[in-house]
Length: 276
Ligand code: FAD
Image 1 (cartoon, rainbow, N blue to C red):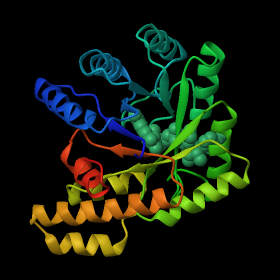
Image 2 (cartoon, rainbow, N blue to C red):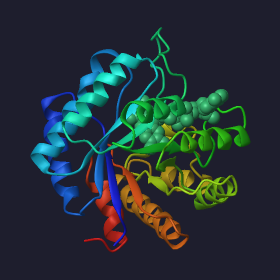
Image 3 (cartoon, protein in one colour):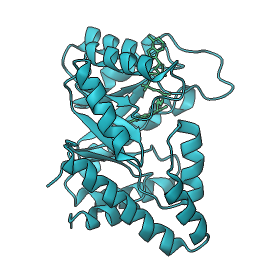
């Protein structure tokens, strides 16, 4: 069976917490290697991720992995979080630069994810396995695609063990990215990040923000379905399952699902892949 991981965001209300509990219970049945919890930069959101990680470990007995981003934070804040994560038995971290929320003045003491990785390694040696972000379609703020590949390699050289990609719907983007970084001497696993399609207008909004391309043939079909939510979901699951099959056949080592805290869009894809 394919190794799987599922990404959640930290719930902030009781209703969201109950939803995450239901989703975790359903997805746990697919025996994930781990589940991860995203991290919002700055201020009052700091503790949501660590509280969620603790809850997922204690109440669901899953390996729970925090995302940690450096933008907008101080070294001392990151040091405290890392200490907490070690104390509660976290073994793995997804280390990112993050994005500055609009209106936040302080840029943070580390500018790039590579600096965060070097910091974690300097303070904690090999206590954490570190995963980083990768961008098969190029990070939207990169000077150019080749510079982005070099910056990606710098994160691996700083001590990252593996990478998870931004989502994409064109498998060639992934295969070309893997070839390009292998030529630069990067040997770590590159795990495709998979975004199931459940709500097309929401997906279009996300994709504009993060620079992910939605192929025209998918967009046109989704537009034609309009408010027919069942057709959107069924076509979306077929498309994403087909993408996963091609990625696995081409050597992808495992799949990381962006669940948005919903079980159904992900299980619809997994069922089509033969996971029951
Ligand atoms: P970096 O690797 O630091 O790169 C950012 C940009 O800077 C790139 O354009 C790169 O080319 C450029 N760059 C890097 N080094 C240099 C250098 N030395 N000189 C000049 N340019 C340089 N965001 C969150 O806020 N919270 C999350 O939990 C979260 N989870 C994510 C999970 C995954 C799997 C992925 C793929 C992304 C996630 N993100 C999250 C989004 C991520 O924070 C953004 O995409 C962010 O803009 C870049 O983060 P990064 O770690 O890839 O940055």
